[in-house]
Length: 161
Image 1 (tube, rainbow, N blue to C red):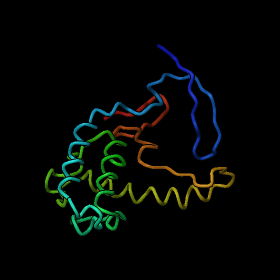
Image 2: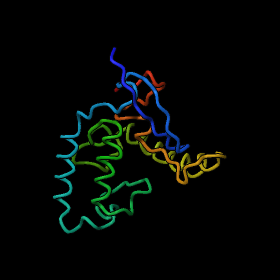
Image 3: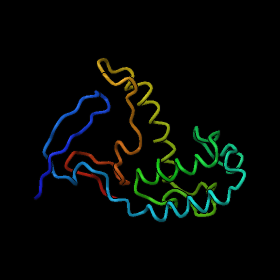
Image 4: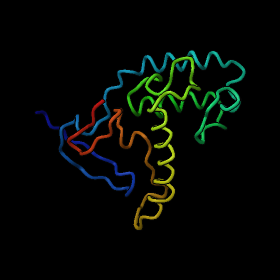
C-alpha cells in the first residue's frame, strides 16, 4: 500500500499536524456526478433569465430552510456545490426532476434536518468550546460527508455510498 505524507489543516484549532496515512482515507471521494449536476445547474440558470436575482422563494415552492430569501441563482449554486458535490449526488437524490417542490423524498427531509444542524454546531457548540484558536470555526456538509452519502465514521473509513 502506497503511503503519502500529507498535512491536515485543523480548522477548529487553527493548527497543522503532519501524518502518514493512505491517501484514500482522508481525501474526498471522486466526484462522478459533477457533469450531470453542472448540466442541470446550467439548464436551471438559463431558464431563470432575468429572474436569476429574485429571491428563490419567488421562483420555487416549499423552500423550508433559511435559503428561501437568497437569490435564485445562488440557491442553484448552493444545491450544486454545497449539497450535491459534498455528498457526491445528483439533484435526483433528493428531488423529482422537474418537480422540485414535491415532498416525496425522505432524503430531502434528512437534508433539511442536517441543514438545521449545521448552524447549531457552528454558532452554539463550536463557539462554546474554550481554547479554539480559530475566530470562526465552522463545519459544513463536506466536513463529514467528504463527497459521499454516508459520512466517514473513522479515519480509515472514507464512507461509502
